[in-house]
Length: 357
Length: 192
Image (cartoon, rainbow over all chains, first blue to last red; front, side):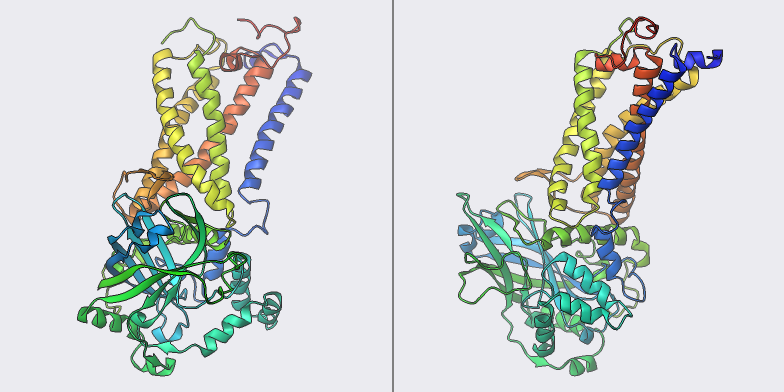
Protein backbone atom coordinates (compact mmCIF):
# COMPACT_ATOMS: atom_id res chain seq x y z
CA UNK A 1 0.00 0.00 0.00
CA UNK A 2 1.39 3.37 -0.96
CA UNK A 3 2.02 5.86 1.75
CA UNK A 4 -0.63 8.49 0.89
CA UNK A 5 -3.35 5.93 1.45
CA UNK A 6 -1.89 4.56 4.58
CA UNK A 7 -3.04 7.40 6.77
CA UNK A 8 -6.49 7.19 5.26
CA UNK A 9 -7.02 3.48 5.46
CA UNK A 10 -4.85 2.54 8.37
CA UNK A 11 -2.97 -0.72 8.14
CA UNK A 12 -5.37 -3.00 6.36
CA UNK A 13 -4.71 -5.43 3.56
CA UNK A 14 -5.94 -4.45 0.11
CA UNK A 15 -8.24 -7.47 -0.17
CA UNK A 16 -9.83 -6.88 3.19
CA UNK A 17 -10.22 -3.19 2.41
CA UNK A 18 -11.98 -3.94 -0.87
CA UNK A 19 -14.26 -6.41 0.89
CA UNK A 20 -15.11 -3.83 3.53
CA UNK A 21 -15.82 -1.16 0.94
CA UNK A 22 -18.18 -3.53 -0.88
CA UNK A 23 -19.94 -4.25 2.39
CA UNK A 24 -20.28 -0.53 3.17
CA UNK A 25 -21.62 0.09 -0.31
CA UNK A 26 -24.12 -2.71 0.12
CA UNK A 27 -25.38 -1.37 3.46
CA UNK A 28 -25.77 2.17 2.16
CA UNK A 29 -27.25 0.95 -1.12
CA UNK A 30 -29.79 -1.24 0.67
CA UNK A 31 -30.89 1.65 2.86
CA UNK A 32 -31.22 3.95 -0.13
CA UNK A 33 -33.20 1.30 -2.03
CA UNK A 34 -35.52 0.75 0.92
CA UNK A 35 -36.04 4.51 1.12
CA UNK A 36 -36.81 4.71 -2.60
CA UNK A 37 -39.24 1.82 -2.30
CA UNK A 38 -40.97 3.44 0.67
CA UNK A 39 -41.25 6.71 -1.22
CA UNK A 40 -42.97 4.86 -4.06
CA UNK A 41 -40.24 5.66 -6.59
CA UNK A 42 -39.97 1.98 -7.50
CA UNK A 43 -43.75 1.47 -7.61
CA UNK A 44 -45.26 3.45 -10.47
CA UNK A 45 -48.59 1.68 -9.95
CA UNK A 46 -48.99 2.91 -6.36
CA UNK A 47 -51.80 5.45 -6.13
CA UNK A 48 -50.18 8.54 -4.67
CA UNK A 49 -51.99 11.75 -3.77
CA UNK A 50 -49.91 13.54 -6.41
CA UNK A 51 -51.32 11.24 -9.09
CA UNK A 52 -54.88 12.01 -8.04
CA UNK A 53 -54.22 15.74 -7.93
CA UNK A 54 -52.48 15.61 -11.33
CA UNK A 55 -55.46 13.74 -12.75
CA UNK A 56 -57.85 16.41 -11.46
CA UNK A 57 -56.27 19.04 -13.69
CA UNK A 58 -58.58 20.14 -16.50
CA UNK A 59 -57.40 20.24 -20.12
CA UNK A 60 -56.67 23.95 -19.64
CA UNK A 61 -54.07 23.11 -16.99
CA UNK A 62 -53.87 23.23 -13.23
CA UNK A 63 -55.75 26.14 -11.63
CA UNK A 64 -52.69 27.87 -10.18
CA UNK A 65 -53.23 29.26 -6.70
CA UNK A 66 -56.62 27.59 -6.40
CA UNK A 67 -57.88 24.36 -4.88
CA UNK A 68 -57.27 21.55 -7.33
CA UNK A 69 -60.91 20.49 -7.09
CA UNK A 70 -63.94 22.47 -5.96
CA UNK A 71 -61.84 25.36 -7.20
CA UNK A 72 -64.59 27.99 -7.39
CA UNK A 73 -66.07 28.99 -4.09
CA UNK A 74 -67.14 31.74 -1.75
CA UNK A 75 -66.44 32.05 1.98
CA UNK A 76 -68.81 32.34 4.88
CA UNK A 77 -68.65 32.71 8.61
CA UNK A 78 -71.23 31.79 11.18
CA UNK A 79 -71.84 29.45 14.08
CA UNK A 80 -72.75 25.89 14.76
CA UNK A 81 -75.47 25.84 17.42
CA UNK A 82 -75.35 22.42 19.05
CA UNK A 83 -78.57 21.08 20.51
CA UNK A 84 -76.70 18.84 22.93
CA UNK A 85 -78.37 15.76 21.46
CA UNK A 86 -75.15 14.70 19.74
CA UNK A 87 -73.43 14.20 23.08
CA UNK A 88 -74.95 10.75 23.39
CA UNK A 89 -73.17 9.76 20.14
CA UNK A 90 -69.81 11.47 20.56
CA UNK A 91 -67.91 13.01 23.42
CA UNK A 92 -66.62 15.77 21.08
CA UNK A 93 -67.05 19.18 22.68
CA UNK A 94 -68.77 20.39 19.51
CA UNK A 95 -71.86 18.41 20.54
CA UNK A 96 -72.16 19.96 23.98
CA UNK A 97 -75.04 22.41 23.89
CA UNK A 98 -73.68 25.80 22.82
CA UNK A 99 -72.52 27.89 19.89
CA UNK A 100 -69.18 27.39 18.19
CA UNK A 101 -67.62 29.58 15.48
CA UNK A 102 -67.59 28.31 11.90
CA UNK A 103 -65.56 29.22 8.83
CA UNK A 104 -66.95 27.68 5.68
CA UNK A 105 -67.09 27.74 1.94
CA UNK A 106 -69.76 27.14 -0.69
CA UNK A 107 -68.25 25.69 -3.84
CA UNK A 108 -68.71 23.98 -7.18
CA UNK A 109 -67.38 20.47 -7.73
CA UNK A 110 -65.05 21.29 -10.58
CA UNK A 111 -61.36 22.00 -11.03
CA UNK A 112 -62.17 25.15 -13.02
CA UNK A 113 -62.14 28.27 -10.81
CA UNK A 114 -63.94 30.22 -13.54
CA UNK A 115 -66.74 27.78 -14.20
CA UNK A 116 -70.20 29.23 -14.76
CA UNK A 117 -72.42 28.42 -11.79
CA UNK A 118 -74.98 26.61 -13.95
CA UNK A 119 -72.31 24.24 -15.30
CA UNK A 120 -71.60 22.38 -12.08
CA UNK A 121 -73.90 19.48 -11.39
CA UNK A 122 -72.47 18.96 -7.93
CA UNK A 123 -72.19 21.66 -5.27
CA UNK A 124 -70.23 21.45 -2.08
CA UNK A 125 -69.93 22.98 1.34
CA UNK A 126 -66.85 22.93 3.56
CA UNK A 127 -66.96 23.78 7.24
CA UNK A 128 -64.48 24.18 10.04
CA UNK A 129 -66.05 24.27 13.50
CA UNK A 130 -63.75 25.33 16.35
CA UNK A 131 -64.36 24.53 19.99
CA UNK A 132 -62.90 26.19 23.11
CA UNK A 133 -60.71 23.14 23.88
CA UNK A 134 -58.69 23.91 20.75
CA UNK A 135 -60.15 21.10 18.67
CA UNK A 136 -61.59 21.42 15.19
CA UNK A 137 -64.10 19.51 13.15
CA UNK A 138 -63.56 19.96 9.45
CA UNK A 139 -65.88 18.50 6.89
CA UNK A 140 -66.31 18.89 3.15
CA UNK A 141 -69.70 17.75 1.93
CA UNK A 142 -71.52 17.64 -1.38
CA UNK A 143 -75.15 17.81 -2.41
CA UNK A 144 -75.19 14.41 -4.13
CA UNK A 145 -76.86 11.68 -2.03
CA UNK A 146 -74.06 9.20 -2.73
CA UNK A 147 -70.60 9.22 -4.32
CA UNK A 148 -69.99 8.22 -7.96
CA UNK A 149 -67.47 5.50 -7.09
CA UNK A 150 -66.83 3.04 -4.29
CA UNK A 151 -63.08 3.45 -3.81
CA UNK A 152 -60.33 6.07 -4.17
CA UNK A 153 -58.81 3.91 -6.92
CA UNK A 154 -62.19 4.08 -8.69
CA UNK A 155 -62.18 7.87 -8.33
CA UNK A 156 -58.74 8.04 -9.92
CA UNK A 157 -59.88 5.80 -12.76
CA UNK A 158 -62.93 8.02 -13.25
CA UNK A 159 -60.68 11.08 -13.54
CA UNK A 160 -58.40 9.35 -16.02
CA UNK A 161 -61.28 7.99 -18.10
CA UNK A 162 -63.18 11.28 -18.22
CA UNK A 163 -60.02 13.11 -19.24
CA UNK A 164 -59.16 10.57 -21.91
CA UNK A 165 -59.58 11.10 -25.65
CA UNK A 166 -60.06 7.37 -26.13
CA UNK A 167 -63.75 6.79 -26.97
CA UNK A 168 -63.61 3.47 -25.16
CA UNK A 169 -62.29 4.98 -21.93
CA UNK A 170 -65.65 5.77 -20.32
CA UNK A 171 -67.40 2.59 -21.45
CA UNK A 172 -64.62 0.45 -20.03
CA UNK A 173 -64.59 2.53 -16.84
CA UNK A 174 -68.34 1.99 -16.42
CA UNK A 175 -67.96 -1.72 -17.10
CA UNK A 176 -65.41 -1.92 -14.31
CA UNK A 177 -67.46 0.24 -11.91
CA UNK A 178 -71.05 -0.95 -11.80
CA UNK A 179 -71.85 1.56 -9.04
CA UNK A 180 -71.28 4.51 -11.38
CA UNK A 181 -74.54 4.51 -13.43
CA UNK A 182 -76.60 5.20 -10.30
CA UNK A 183 -74.73 8.46 -9.91
CA UNK A 184 -75.31 9.34 -13.56
CA UNK A 185 -78.99 8.65 -12.95
CA UNK A 186 -79.04 11.04 -10.02
CA UNK A 187 -77.15 13.69 -12.02
CA UNK A 188 -79.70 13.53 -14.84
CA UNK A 189 -82.84 13.38 -12.74
CA UNK A 190 -82.20 15.45 -9.63
CA UNK A 191 -83.67 18.96 -9.77
CA UNK A 192 -81.39 22.01 -9.61
CA UNK A 193 -81.90 24.81 -7.15
CA UNK A 194 -81.13 28.48 -7.65
CA UNK A 195 -79.32 28.89 -4.34
CA UNK A 196 -76.53 27.38 -2.31
CA UNK A 197 -78.89 27.92 0.65
CA UNK A 198 -81.44 25.47 -0.74
CA UNK A 199 -79.17 22.45 -1.08
CA UNK A 200 -78.64 19.59 1.31
CA UNK A 201 -74.99 18.73 1.86
CA UNK A 202 -73.94 15.21 2.84
CA UNK A 203 -70.75 13.81 4.33
CA UNK A 204 -71.18 10.66 2.23
CA UNK A 205 -68.18 9.18 3.98
CA UNK A 206 -68.75 7.35 7.21
CA UNK A 207 -66.92 8.08 10.43
CA UNK A 208 -66.90 6.56 13.89
CA UNK A 209 -68.32 8.51 16.79
CA UNK A 210 -67.08 7.59 20.24
CA UNK A 211 -69.29 8.47 23.20
CA UNK A 212 -68.22 9.38 26.74
CA UNK A 213 -68.20 5.74 27.85
CA UNK A 214 -66.22 4.59 24.83
CA UNK A 215 -69.21 3.27 22.88
CA UNK A 216 -68.64 3.42 19.11
CA UNK A 217 -71.09 3.97 16.30
CA UNK A 218 -70.50 4.37 12.59
CA UNK A 219 -72.25 7.47 11.29
CA UNK A 220 -72.71 9.78 8.35
CA UNK A 221 -74.01 13.33 8.59
CA UNK A 222 -75.98 15.80 6.53
CA UNK A 223 -76.83 19.49 6.54
CA UNK A 224 -80.51 19.88 5.62
CA UNK A 225 -81.52 23.35 4.43
CA UNK A 226 -84.21 25.18 6.36
CA UNK A 227 -84.85 27.29 3.25
CA UNK A 228 -87.43 25.61 1.03
CA UNK A 229 -85.94 24.67 -2.33
CA UNK A 230 -87.08 26.50 -5.46
CA UNK A 231 -86.18 24.43 -8.48
CA UNK A 232 -84.79 25.93 -11.66
CA UNK A 233 -83.42 24.50 -14.87
CA UNK A 234 -79.68 24.92 -15.46
CA UNK A 235 -80.52 27.00 -18.55
CA UNK A 236 -82.60 29.43 -16.53
CA UNK A 237 -79.89 29.56 -13.87
CA UNK A 238 -77.41 30.39 -16.64
CA UNK A 239 -79.51 33.39 -17.65
CA UNK A 240 -78.80 34.90 -14.25
CA UNK A 241 -75.09 35.07 -15.08
CA UNK A 242 -72.00 32.94 -14.53
CA UNK A 243 -71.78 33.88 -10.85
CA UNK A 244 -75.48 33.68 -10.10
CA UNK A 245 -75.08 31.42 -7.07
CA UNK A 246 -72.46 33.66 -5.49
CA UNK A 247 -74.47 36.83 -6.07
CA UNK A 248 -77.58 35.14 -4.75
CA UNK A 249 -76.00 33.89 -1.54
CA UNK A 250 -74.47 37.33 -0.86
CA UNK A 251 -77.88 38.98 -1.18
CA UNK A 252 -79.73 36.27 0.69
CA UNK A 253 -77.41 36.34 3.69
CA UNK A 254 -77.49 40.15 3.73
CA UNK A 255 -81.23 39.74 4.17
CA UNK A 256 -80.87 37.28 7.02
CA UNK A 257 -78.81 34.38 8.33
CA UNK A 258 -79.30 31.05 6.57
CA UNK A 259 -79.71 27.79 8.46
CA UNK A 260 -79.17 24.10 7.98
CA UNK A 261 -80.13 21.38 10.41
CA UNK A 262 -77.28 18.96 10.99
CA UNK A 263 -78.39 15.39 11.32
CA UNK A 264 -76.23 12.41 12.21
CA UNK A 265 -77.38 9.04 10.91
CA UNK A 266 -76.24 5.90 12.71
CA UNK A 267 -75.49 2.81 10.64
CA UNK A 268 -77.26 -0.44 11.37
CA UNK A 269 -75.13 -3.57 11.50
CA UNK A 270 -74.44 -4.68 7.94
CA UNK A 271 -74.85 -1.25 6.36
CA UNK A 272 -72.20 -0.44 3.71
CA UNK A 273 -70.04 1.74 5.94
CA UNK A 274 -66.97 1.48 3.72
CA UNK A 275 -68.69 2.42 0.47
CA UNK A 276 -69.90 6.01 -0.02
CA UNK A 277 -71.45 5.09 -3.38
CA UNK A 278 -74.15 3.27 -1.43
CA UNK A 279 -76.72 5.23 0.53
CA UNK A 280 -77.88 3.59 3.72
CA UNK A 281 -81.48 2.38 3.70
CA UNK A 282 -84.18 4.58 5.19
CA UNK A 283 -85.24 4.07 8.75
CA UNK A 284 -81.82 4.48 10.31
CA UNK A 285 -81.61 6.23 13.63
CA UNK A 286 -81.08 9.93 13.01
CA UNK A 287 -80.15 12.55 15.61
CA UNK A 288 -80.48 16.31 15.12
CA UNK A 289 -77.21 17.50 16.59
CA UNK A 290 -77.40 21.20 15.80
CA UNK A 291 -77.90 24.03 13.35
CA UNK A 292 -75.38 25.58 11.00
CA UNK A 293 -76.06 29.32 10.92
CA UNK A 294 -74.42 31.18 8.03
CA UNK A 295 -74.20 34.82 9.06
CA UNK A 296 -71.79 36.52 6.66
CA UNK A 297 -70.44 35.94 3.17
CA UNK A 298 -66.94 36.96 2.06
CA UNK A 299 -65.38 36.87 -1.40
CA UNK A 300 -62.74 34.14 -1.48
CA UNK A 301 -59.60 36.07 -2.52
CA UNK A 302 -59.51 37.88 0.83
CA UNK A 303 -61.91 35.66 2.69
CA UNK A 304 -61.25 33.60 5.81
CA UNK A 305 -61.82 30.28 4.00
CA UNK A 306 -59.21 30.94 1.36
CA UNK A 307 -56.33 29.27 3.15
CA UNK A 308 -58.33 26.69 5.06
CA UNK A 309 -57.92 23.10 3.94
CA UNK A 310 -61.28 21.45 4.64
CA UNK A 311 -59.48 18.19 5.32
CA UNK A 312 -62.09 15.60 6.35
CA UNK A 313 -59.57 13.82 8.58
CA UNK A 314 -59.26 16.84 10.89
CA UNK A 315 -61.56 15.56 13.61
CA UNK A 316 -61.99 16.30 17.30
CA UNK A 317 -61.53 13.68 19.98
CA UNK A 318 -64.68 11.55 19.98
CA UNK A 319 -64.63 11.18 16.20
CA UNK A 320 -62.37 9.12 14.02
CA UNK A 321 -62.20 7.62 10.58
CA UNK A 322 -64.02 4.36 9.84
CA UNK A 323 -63.44 1.56 7.34
CA UNK A 324 -64.41 4.04 4.61
CA UNK A 325 -61.13 4.52 2.69
CA UNK A 326 -62.04 7.96 1.35
CA UNK A 327 -61.25 10.30 4.25
CA UNK A 328 -57.62 9.13 4.27
CA UNK A 329 -57.34 9.46 0.49
CA UNK A 330 -59.03 12.85 0.53
CA UNK A 331 -56.82 14.04 3.37
CA UNK A 332 -53.70 13.02 1.43
CA UNK A 333 -54.90 14.62 -1.81
CA UNK A 334 -56.20 17.81 -0.13
CA UNK A 335 -52.80 18.22 1.47
CA UNK A 336 -51.08 18.04 -1.91
CA UNK A 337 -53.58 20.53 -3.30
CA UNK A 338 -52.98 22.84 -0.34
CA UNK A 339 -49.19 22.57 -0.63
CA UNK A 340 -49.34 23.39 -4.32
CA UNK A 341 -51.74 26.29 -4.11
CA UNK A 342 -50.10 28.01 -1.14
CA UNK A 343 -46.84 27.97 -3.11
CA UNK A 344 -48.68 29.62 -6.00
CA UNK A 345 -50.44 32.34 -4.03
CA UNK A 346 -49.08 34.97 -6.41
CA UNK A 347 -51.19 33.45 -9.18
CA UNK A 348 -54.35 34.15 -7.20
CA UNK A 349 -54.14 37.78 -6.04
CA UNK A 350 -55.62 38.51 -2.66
CA UNK A 351 -57.62 41.50 -3.76
CA UNK A 352 -60.60 40.48 -5.87
CA UNK A 353 -59.42 42.31 -8.94
CA UNK A 354 -62.64 42.63 -10.91
CA UNK A 355 -63.42 38.94 -10.86
CA UNK A 356 -67.01 39.91 -10.29
CA UNK A 357 -67.34 38.12 -7.02
CA UNK B 1 -14.12 19.68 26.07
CA UNK B 2 -12.56 16.61 27.62
CA UNK B 3 -9.96 14.98 25.48
CA UNK B 4 -8.83 12.04 27.56
CA UNK B 5 -11.68 9.69 26.69
CA UNK B 6 -11.98 7.06 23.97
CA UNK B 7 -15.74 6.68 24.23
CA UNK B 8 -18.77 8.89 24.27
CA UNK B 9 -20.45 9.05 27.67
CA UNK B 10 -23.18 6.51 28.41
CA UNK B 11 -26.07 9.00 28.06
CA UNK B 12 -24.64 10.16 24.74
CA UNK B 13 -24.46 6.62 23.38
CA UNK B 14 -27.97 5.86 24.58
CA UNK B 15 -29.32 9.03 22.97
CA UNK B 16 -27.41 8.39 19.75
CA UNK B 17 -28.82 4.92 19.15
CA UNK B 18 -32.32 5.82 20.33
CA UNK B 19 -32.40 8.84 18.05
CA UNK B 20 -30.85 6.90 15.18
CA UNK B 21 -33.85 4.57 15.26
CA UNK B 22 -36.32 7.45 15.68
CA UNK B 23 -34.86 9.58 12.90
CA UNK B 24 -34.52 6.76 10.38
CA UNK B 25 -38.09 5.69 11.15
CA UNK B 26 -39.21 9.31 10.81
CA UNK B 27 -37.62 9.73 7.38
CA UNK B 28 -39.16 6.52 6.10
CA UNK B 29 -42.54 7.46 7.57
CA UNK B 30 -42.26 10.88 5.95
CA UNK B 31 -41.63 9.68 2.40
CA UNK B 32 -43.94 6.73 2.87
CA UNK B 33 -46.93 8.79 3.95
CA UNK B 34 -46.58 11.11 0.95
CA UNK B 35 -46.58 8.13 -1.40
CA UNK B 36 -50.02 6.72 -0.71
CA UNK B 37 -53.69 7.54 -0.37
CA UNK B 38 -54.40 4.35 1.55
CA UNK B 39 -55.56 4.54 5.18
CA UNK B 40 -51.92 3.96 6.08
CA UNK B 41 -51.52 7.64 5.23
CA UNK B 42 -53.44 8.76 8.30
CA UNK B 43 -51.70 6.20 10.51
CA UNK B 44 -48.29 7.39 9.37
CA UNK B 45 -49.22 11.06 9.80
CA UNK B 46 -50.44 10.31 13.31
CA UNK B 47 -47.04 8.77 14.15
CA UNK B 48 -45.03 11.43 12.32
CA UNK B 49 -46.21 14.30 14.53
CA UNK B 50 -45.62 12.90 18.04
CA UNK B 51 -42.41 11.21 16.90
CA UNK B 52 -41.22 14.56 15.55
CA UNK B 53 -41.98 16.19 18.88
CA UNK B 54 -40.10 13.40 20.67
CA UNK B 55 -37.09 13.86 18.38
CA UNK B 56 -37.07 17.60 19.07
CA UNK B 57 -37.01 17.00 22.82
CA UNK B 58 -34.34 14.30 22.50
CA UNK B 59 -32.25 16.53 20.23
CA UNK B 60 -32.31 19.35 22.76
CA UNK B 61 -31.30 16.96 25.56
CA UNK B 62 -28.60 15.61 23.31
CA UNK B 63 -27.27 19.07 22.58
CA UNK B 64 -26.96 19.64 26.32
CA UNK B 65 -25.17 16.32 26.86
CA UNK B 66 -22.82 17.11 24.00
CA UNK B 67 -21.97 20.49 25.51
CA UNK B 68 -21.58 18.83 28.91
CA UNK B 69 -19.53 15.77 27.91
CA UNK B 70 -17.94 16.79 24.62
CA UNK B 71 -16.63 14.15 22.25
CA UNK B 72 -13.57 11.89 22.22
CA UNK B 73 -10.85 13.24 19.95
CA UNK B 74 -10.60 12.00 16.40
CA UNK B 75 -7.51 9.85 15.66
CA UNK B 76 -4.45 12.01 15.24
CA UNK B 77 -3.61 10.36 11.91
CA UNK B 78 -7.00 11.11 10.35
CA UNK B 79 -6.43 13.18 7.19
CA UNK B 80 -7.44 16.79 7.64
CA UNK B 81 -10.20 16.76 4.98
CA UNK B 82 -11.86 13.77 6.69
CA UNK B 83 -11.59 15.41 10.07
CA UNK B 84 -13.13 18.56 8.68
CA UNK B 85 -15.93 16.59 7.01
CA UNK B 86 -16.59 14.79 10.28
CA UNK B 87 -16.78 18.02 12.21
CA UNK B 88 -18.96 19.86 9.70
CA UNK B 89 -21.33 16.95 9.14
CA UNK B 90 -21.95 16.71 12.87
CA UNK B 91 -22.80 20.39 13.10
CA UNK B 92 -25.28 19.91 10.27
CA UNK B 93 -26.73 16.76 11.87
CA UNK B 94 -27.39 18.63 15.11
CA UNK B 95 -28.83 21.56 13.18
CA UNK B 96 -31.21 19.34 11.21
CA UNK B 97 -32.25 17.24 14.21
CA UNK B 98 -33.49 20.44 15.82
CA UNK B 99 -34.62 22.29 12.70
CA UNK B 100 -36.69 19.54 11.07
CA UNK B 101 -39.28 19.19 13.85
CA UNK B 102 -39.48 22.98 14.18
CA UNK B 103 -40.02 23.35 10.43
CA UNK B 104 -42.74 20.70 10.52
CA UNK B 105 -44.42 22.33 13.49
CA UNK B 106 -44.14 25.75 11.85
CA UNK B 107 -45.47 24.42 8.57
CA UNK B 108 -48.58 23.02 10.26
CA UNK B 109 -48.99 26.26 12.19
CA UNK B 110 -48.74 28.39 9.04
CA UNK B 111 -51.36 26.18 7.40
CA UNK B 112 -53.67 26.62 10.43
CA UNK B 113 -53.91 22.89 10.98
CA UNK B 114 -54.47 21.82 14.55
CA UNK B 115 -51.16 20.29 15.71
CA UNK B 116 -52.49 17.16 17.38
CA UNK B 117 -49.93 14.89 19.01
CA UNK B 118 -52.38 12.55 20.69
CA UNK B 119 -56.10 12.61 21.30
CA UNK B 120 -56.59 15.71 23.41
CA UNK B 121 -52.94 16.84 23.29
CA UNK B 122 -52.35 19.82 21.01
CA UNK B 123 -49.38 22.03 20.45
CA UNK B 124 -49.93 25.77 20.01
CA UNK B 125 -49.14 27.44 16.70
CA UNK B 126 -45.58 28.78 16.60
CA UNK B 127 -46.08 31.03 13.57
CA UNK B 128 -49.14 32.91 12.30
CA UNK B 129 -51.30 31.52 9.50
CA UNK B 130 -49.70 32.49 6.19
CA UNK B 131 -49.78 30.84 2.79
CA UNK B 132 -46.38 32.27 1.87
CA UNK B 133 -44.77 31.17 5.10
CA UNK B 134 -46.35 27.74 4.70
CA UNK B 135 -44.91 27.41 1.21
CA UNK B 136 -41.39 28.28 2.43
CA UNK B 137 -41.51 26.05 5.51
CA UNK B 138 -43.03 23.12 3.63
CA UNK B 139 -40.42 23.33 0.87
CA UNK B 140 -37.65 23.53 3.46
CA UNK B 141 -39.02 20.62 5.49
CA UNK B 142 -39.19 18.45 2.38
CA UNK B 143 -35.83 19.43 0.91
CA UNK B 144 -33.98 19.16 4.20
CA UNK B 145 -35.54 15.75 4.85
CA UNK B 146 -33.82 14.45 1.73
CA UNK B 147 -30.63 16.26 2.71
CA UNK B 148 -30.79 14.69 6.17
CA UNK B 149 -31.28 11.22 4.72
CA UNK B 150 -28.29 11.72 2.40
CA UNK B 151 -26.22 12.95 5.32
CA UNK B 152 -27.23 9.93 7.42
CA UNK B 153 -26.15 7.60 4.60
CA UNK B 154 -22.79 9.35 4.52
CA UNK B 155 -22.61 9.14 8.32
CA UNK B 156 -23.27 5.40 8.22
CA UNK B 157 -20.76 4.89 5.43
CA UNK B 158 -18.14 6.86 7.34
CA UNK B 159 -18.85 5.00 10.59
CA UNK B 160 -18.45 1.65 8.84
CA UNK B 161 -15.32 2.91 7.14
CA UNK B 162 -13.87 3.70 10.53
CA UNK B 163 -15.02 0.35 11.89
CA UNK B 164 -14.00 -1.96 9.07
CA UNK B 165 -11.28 -0.23 7.11
CA UNK B 166 -9.46 2.21 9.33
CA UNK B 167 -10.22 0.35 12.57
CA UNK B 168 -9.26 3.47 14.43
CA UNK B 169 -11.70 3.25 17.34
CA UNK B 170 -14.02 6.00 16.08
CA UNK B 171 -16.88 3.56 15.53
CA UNK B 172 -16.24 1.93 18.88
CA UNK B 173 -16.34 5.28 20.61
CA UNK B 174 -20.09 5.31 19.98
CA UNK B 175 -20.81 1.61 19.58
CA UNK B 176 -18.74 0.09 22.42
CA UNK B 177 -18.62 -3.15 20.45
CA UNK B 178 -16.13 -3.70 17.66
CA UNK B 179 -17.17 -4.90 14.24
CA UNK B 180 -13.61 -5.84 13.27
CA UNK B 181 -11.95 -9.02 14.44
CA UNK B 182 -8.90 -8.40 16.56
CA UNK B 183 -6.80 -11.14 15.01
CA UNK B 184 -3.45 -9.82 16.06
CA UNK B 185 -2.05 -9.50 12.53
CA UNK B 186 -3.82 -6.30 11.79
CA UNK B 187 -4.52 -4.76 15.10
CA UNK B 188 -3.04 -1.33 14.67
CA UNK B 189 -6.38 0.43 14.57
CA UNK B 190 -8.10 -1.62 17.20
CA UNK B 191 -6.04 -0.20 19.99
CA UNK B 192 -5.02 3.32 20.54
